Image 1 (cartoon, rainbow, N blue to C red):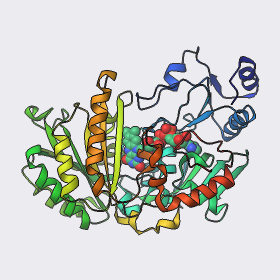
Image 2: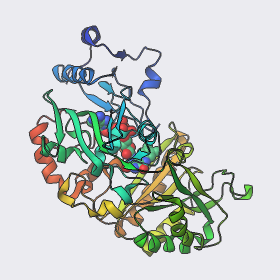
Image 3: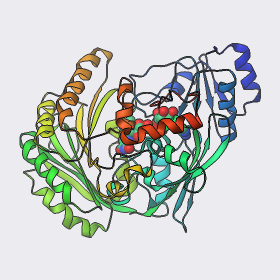
Image 4: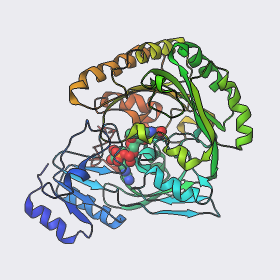
Amino acid sequence: MSQLSQPVIEEFKADFPGSVILPDDMQYEETRQIWNAMIDRRPSMIARCTSSSEVAQSLNFVRRHDLPFSVRGGGHNIAGNAVCNDGVMIDLSLMKKVLIDQKRHLGFVEPGCTLADFDASAQAHGLATPLGINSTTGVAGLTLGGGFGWLSRRYGMTVDNLLGMDVIIADGRQLHASESENPDLFWGLRGGGGNFGIVTSFEYQLHSVGPNVLCGLIAFPFDQAKSIITQFARFTETMPDDLNVWMIARKAPPLPFLPETVHGKEIIALAICYAGDPTEGEKHIEPLREFGTAYGEHIGVQPYTDWQRAFDPLLSSGARNYWKSHNFSRIDDGPIDAIIDSAGVLPSSQCEIFIATVGGQTGRVKPEAMAYSNRDANYVINVHARWETAADDERCIVWAREFFTRSQPYASNGAYINFLTEDETNRIAFAYGASYERLVELKKKFDPDNLFRINQNILSN
Ligand SMILES: Cc1cc2nc3c(=O)[nH]c(=O)nc-3n(C[C@H](O)[C@H](O)[C@H](O)COP(=O)(O)OP(=O)(O)OC[C@H]3O[C@@H](n4cnc5c(N)ncnc54)[C@H](O)[C@@H]3O)c2cc1C
């Protein structure tokens, strides 16, 4: 692997129309930062691309000089794969065009878009596709790993709504991948992450959503946790696809609908979103209010784009974060007791354990249909350790690992590739499950030298 010398940098700069940021430049510190402050890597050069030809130029350059490189979309990956030490960061975050074909319900999205960028454009036409729950997340990384959020029970994983992609592969060719063009590559890109190339455009199927939806939060006292989580687990097994409910165990943030005396105390919160007619939704959410005696609730009809931003203040960039997650097909006493024990000893006010409910339409797609294959994952439980200073690293990480180990015996197969941390490279094959062998074959075909390796890497040898 060669190093990036000054003449080599000058050679690149001479031809590259986009901006090039070097360690001595004013914008360097800000541009190399990603969401998770645990990741502190220093690339030798950042190539800020504004078009697919600049992406191709950057890729040709790193290949020609045998340089390590990373690809940055929204920079939210917990493992920090958007940034590398010493090599080149190919930064796509300025590529933010979104084109909506209102008539055909299609969205064409560039890879620097955040969920907020995409949602805002689609919702201007009353349209949306399933994305995640934090609006500053990148569309690109989320999609390439699978993608799920409030609309997934109704409309499936993000990848289930992906119709095509423009991608630059390892040998520099620009290909279109869809069911009819390069279908094997299309299969691999729908879950295979950044392993096969750099995607410069995504085409999505859109659906009529909102623009106003019934959504919000109910917060219950922690001493009702066992009963609330058990009822949540049974309720979510049979609720309609239009409804999604997630459970969050954490300390109460200072939300205006909660009495001040509750702020900072452990709570069990249910986060609710109904994708269909709000009046119909009211009937379906009523039983949730009967789960216990709530501290308070804030539920109403509001713009879908506002709900997509509702958790942003709790998930801002710049904190230190460590995650561990398992898939579950059913939630019984084992994981519930583990949640209650771990959430009773939260090591910081920002730590939480949540149950993301998936199921519905996500489970009706055949596991072999695409690289994302964990179709029996009705729930994803993520233990999210989050704190501010390095002095708390060990305490918080140990807490997350203990929960992970304790809940492991009850987990189902596979794991969500987008939730794997830096130290979980030994879980990649397990995460992909039945798809892994075919992914290895595809990697041999499209990237035999493992050019794209700073990612959840599918080893081809
Ligand atoms: C606060 C928070 C909330 C989240 N909530 C959800 C959620 O609700 N649902 C969900 O499904 N996930 C969620 N995620 C996980 C999220 O899907 C992943 O972190 C994902 O990797 C983010 O994509 P990104 O573009 O922001 O990341 P980046 O770090 O920029 O990229 C992630 C990976 O994708 C590769 N990549 C990025 N762009 C391209 C491209 N154009 N072509 C090829 N490879 C590329 C990168 O090289 C890297 O390996 C959340 C993450 C965070 C931090």
